[in-house]
Amino acid sequence: MKREGAGILPAVTDWILHKGALVVRMKCNNLPVVVINTHLNANYQGNWERNSHYVREERRQLHQLADIVVAQPSDALVIVSGDFNIPRGGSLYNQFVLESKLTDAMAGDMRPTYRVPRIMPHRYAVPIDFAFYRVPALPDIQVHSDLHFQEKIPVALGRSSYPSDHYAVALSISWQTEKSNLAEEVGD
Image (cartoon, rainbow, N blue to C red; front, side, top):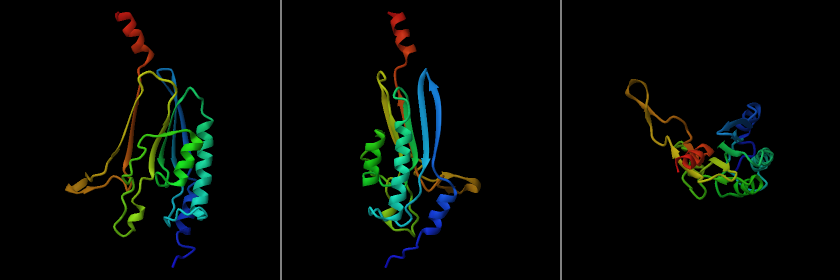
């Protein structure tokens, strides 16, 4: 039997913490770069049904995030990463990709990004952390992404521990810069 109020206290905590998005703008070789980091509210019941309170709140947050992404200049490299707390390939994920026009650097990779404690049901072991990107026309664009920190690392007194309950999603984007083109033209 499901308890309606289960998970309400952690959800209130999410609201109090004002989870949202941090937007940083910079330039890299004259290319505008926008990095948006987010941590959306969690779905503490793992209930992904359309009318779930958690799903409604996550949908609202994802819509706001998509609006922020779409508002960024079209000539900018846009990177959106963080703990989205929605499963890859689900309806919320698919709608966000459609609205934001972003590419998931690890699309189709169903390895969990959340290390589920033994006391929790396995249904929570899903990919919920993402690194999305949108690139303008860039020469020789290369995108690589993978999970990191899946193993314990050494800590004090000869013990080891996981750095987090989430695995890191590493993203690397490279392209040929104008300076490289000029150097090649001068060298000919």
